[in-house]
Length: 357
Image (cartoon, rainbow, N blue to C red; front, top):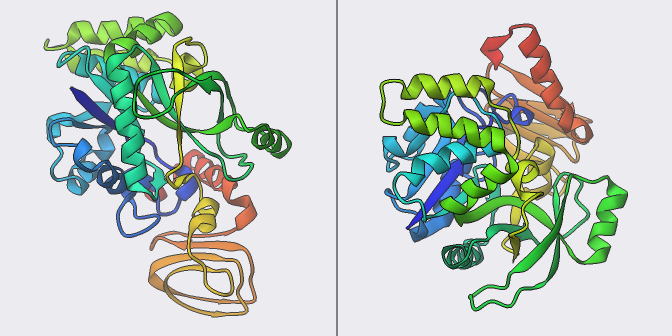
C-alpha cells in the first residue's frame, strides 16, 4: 500500500498581499491557471487515488482545500492545531496512517513546488516507492542544480548504490543549509551536490523508528497522541500536545542524523517557489523583461512583475519592481528586496492589522 501525503499548512508570507491566512500560496494560482495544490495532485496522475491521497493542513484552510480538491475525502484531510514545521507534521501523519498499514510506503510532498516534466517526475517517484517498499531506507529526491542557488538547501551524495531497482540511488554524505553565493558556487563546481527538494519516501515503520532514535521527545509526544486515538479525549489530547511540541524540520531533526538515507537524482523542471522574485525568474517575459498579469498601461517600464487581475495598473519610468494588487492591499517593492515582504507581514501582525492578514 502507498499513501501520498501533501503538506499544505504553510502561510506563504513572502507572497503577501495575495497570500493570506485563509488563502495561503498553495491555494493560489501563483504560476499558471491551476493553484499550486491542484498542480501537486495533477502531476501525480494515477499514482494518487481518492483512497490513498492525504493532505495535512490547519483548520482555517480546511474549507479552501476541500473546495479545490472536491474528490478528497474529508477524513483524508489531517488537521494540525498549529503548524510546527515538518517533523511534527510528518510524525502526526505517520501515526494516523500507521493504523491502516504500518508497513505501507509513505510519500511526503510539499504543496508549493513547480514541476514541469510530469512524466519524468512520476518515473522517479515510482522508482522511489519501489525501493522504499523493498528496503528500510529513508529516501529523498535531489534536484540536479542548474545554477548556484542560495535559496535552496543542498544534499551531497556519494557513489551509486548497487541495487536491483529501476532508478539509480546514491548514498547521502551530508545535508547543507542554504549557502552564500561563494559556497553555492563551490557546491556546483564539485559536481556531487544536489538541491534538496523536500520530497521524501519511506515506510511508515521506518520513519517512526528514525523519529524515535533522533527526536525522542517528539516520539514521546506522538505516542501520547496515539494513545488517545478513538477516545473522547482524542482532539483535546492533540491540541494539548501541540501546545508543548517543539517545531523542527524533518531534515534537521532526522535526515541529517540517520545512517540509512539515500537520494535519487531528479531532473524534471523543479522550482521551489518561495518569493515573488522566484515567480519573476521562472515566468515568461515580454520584450521589456516584464511579467504581466491583468490590465495595464505601461511606458518606459522594464524588468517588473505586475500582478493585478482586477485593477488596471498604470506605470511610468520604473524598473525592477514587484507590483501586486489584491483589492484591499497593494504591494510595491524592489525585486531585489522581495525577501523583506515577510517583515511587512510581521509589522502588520504586531499592529493587529488582521483584516489584511
